[in-house]
Image (cartoon, rainbow, N blue to C red):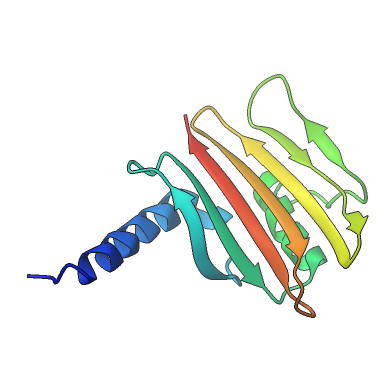
Length: 134
C-alpha cells in the first residue's frame, strides 16, 4: 500500500499520462517539463513545456500538424469558419526579449491553443498548451 505522501505523486503521474495521451502529437517532441493544471476528468487542461529548439523549428512542427505538405506562411494565416478544422496561425510577434507566436486549432472533438514564447534563459522557449475536449 502506498504511503500518504506517495499517493499525490501517483495521482500526478497518472494525470500526466492522460494529458500526454490526449495531446498526442500536439505535445512538442523536443520539449521537457510537466507543470500545468487540469480538472479531475482531464477534459480541460493547461501544460507548460520548454525547449531549446528555435522558434522557427517549433512553428514548423505545429504548421505541419495543421497543414501537412503545405509551405509554412511567412505571415499569419486564419481559417476561423466554415467546415472544421478551424485554425489561427500567427506570425511571430516581437517583444522585449525575443519573439512569440500563437496557434489555435479546433475540431468537433477538441480545441488546442498553443503559445510559444521566449524565456529568461538564452536559447530557450516556453510552450504553453491549453486543451479542451468538447
